[in-house]
Amino acid sequence: MGDTIGMIETRGFVGLVQAVDSMLKTAEVELIGYERIGGGYVTAIVRGAEEAVRVATEAGAQEAERIGELISVHVLPQPHPDLNKALPLP
Image (cartoon, rainbow, N blue to C red; front, side, top):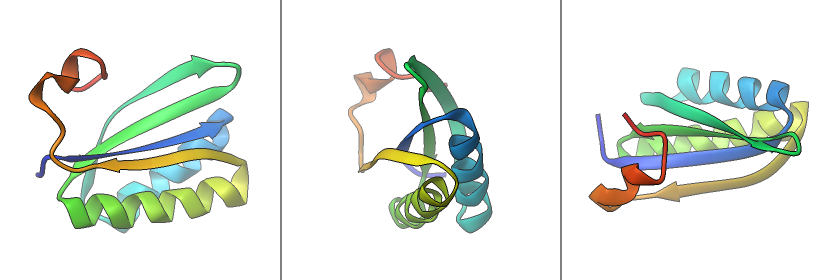
């Protein structure tokens, strides 16, 4: 599928669900996990080809802003193989 990961963090679960739904419908990416951080903050992680992840995270960010509170968006091309020790990556 690709080795780029994209992350979206929101405050509120509903905004994150809307963002993830939009990401999955917009581009060929795979949801690989989400993490509740505390204080209402939630982060979702998707994986795919770099351009697909960029398109997906942009779409997800727009939806998160529309529904709730977008905190952060980040795309990480070619993550180090050991990164899976810190993230919920399968």
